[in-house]
Amino acid sequence: MVYDATRSDNEELSAQLAERHIRPDLRPEVGRLIRLTKSHQVEPGDRLGAILISIDLSILGAEPARYDAYAAAIRREFAHVPDREYRAGRCRVLSQFAARAVIYPDAGFAAIYDRRARENLARELASLIPR
Image (cartoon, rainbow, N blue to C red; front, side, top):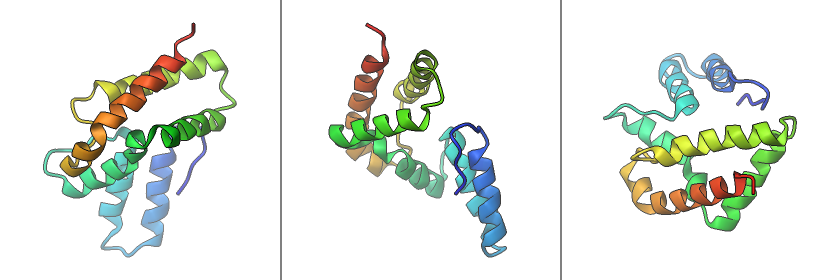
């Protein structure tokens, strides 16, 4: 996996890295699945994509203390971003997930984690609004 909080092409670079190191017959599918993590958008009927994206987003539905630790870790990752800009950007990202009719494209994940994910998103969004 390739990750640098200052870059916007981590998913593409991760997909390319995976494609270089796995069996040729698996390259297209593995690359496609990794690339889905950029948008978290899954086409209807894409079972593997739905499972992968649901796993990738599972932290959103974690117990509140675990989610709060995750949110704090995200802020540390983006320590190079001034607070005002970070709050605005994080609000945009969280609002996009909260506005989705379905956060988890896999129905099993949705049934278990959707309510708590929405509660976590709402709580973090409220914490990001300057008082």
